[in-house]
Length: 339
Image (cartoon, rainbow, N blue to C red; front, side, top):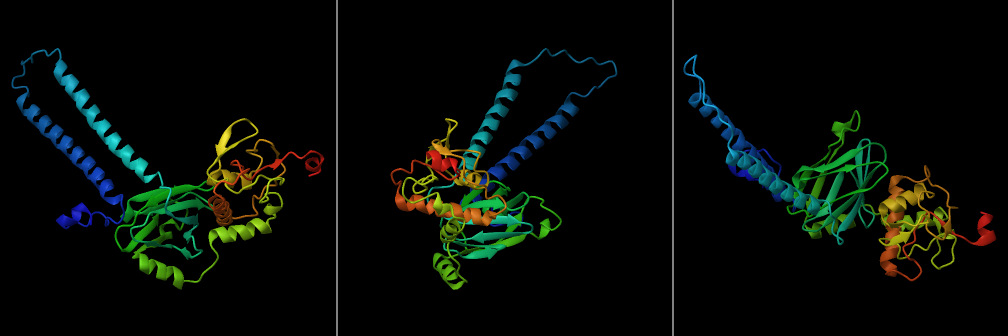
């Protein structure tokens, strides 16, 4: 329940996430601070207008050269207040935009004009998001067309969903119920209709919902099938010596590039390696991987990423992986030259 609800003013949505209370407190602090100084300045201006008004046409006021203490005060006090606001806001921002390592990851894709979500077990939904109460939830999001923004007012979270990259948002639902979901970035003529619902359920009810809906394979399982259908496994073999880097245990590790620099194998790097494999070539491999631009959708890319993540978690960093990822192939003399 928001603070203003105690005064029977339906001004804010309910507080339904771990961030909602602190976001509201910061918001009300800024309102109170603004109101205090606005009223103080208005009252002071009115008092000074009466006290120091000209009483005679020939009246000449005394010359004031300056007041050092006053000037220091009106410089230092606003500076300290600004730094306090900055520290509070930066702390909250860091908490909201630094997802925890252990969280329920749900893939979200924005598309004119709907939201599509896929749960780890394969359950899919459109313009809705079912969540378990009290559990950390991480949303990995991208767009298939234009910029959208995933906005859940009751959670006090909003994140841009951008084509060509991945953004993340996380929260802990703290109150069961159904809450509004909006696109908060103008995305076309039907932008106002790009809405949905977030349904927070008790953990047992959430598991029942997962079990009761039509099931498809998990993102990782779909990614494994796609990996094979695209013939990625002909180069990226499970054992060493393939024409492509070994992917087991690669996710989340740094990889050395042919340019001498390093990059962490994360969602963005894997996506780039699938669509523009020549952009970052792993050291010791030649650029023979073809692009899959236009052949796979954003949802399929997310599935491939989920599959590669599952390889990392199951192998616990198998030897020889060394953080290598897709996008290149090893130098193998005459055999490579023939490719």
